[in-house]
Image (cartoon, rainbow, N blue to C red):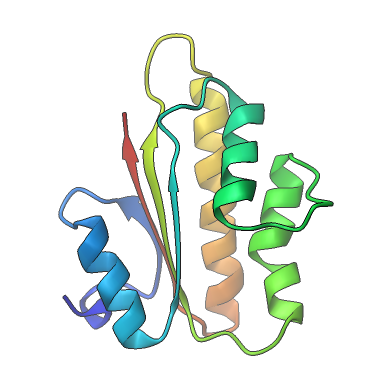
Length: 131
């Protein structure tokens, strides 16, 4: 799999791709690979906590969507030149009792992050699946 066949700044369903293939493609391209399995999340606070742990956010992570955006953009941008990103959000909860609006807001944060990195000409590809 070659990342060149996938738009450089996108948030999309993982349907046609396998996680292992995306990981290898990110490694081959020298991009950061960020993976989180979110199947156990029952709500937005838990989902954010799981992301913080999986992505190794700093201890001061505010566990809200603004803090998530900051960690995915400004914090990383300030740390130096970035080669690109492949992010996988596997098994986002899509079941009764899980706040669908929160899930869509989460994906919007990743769409905004893709726009942020696009303005800097840095590839940011985010793939997600639903449980």
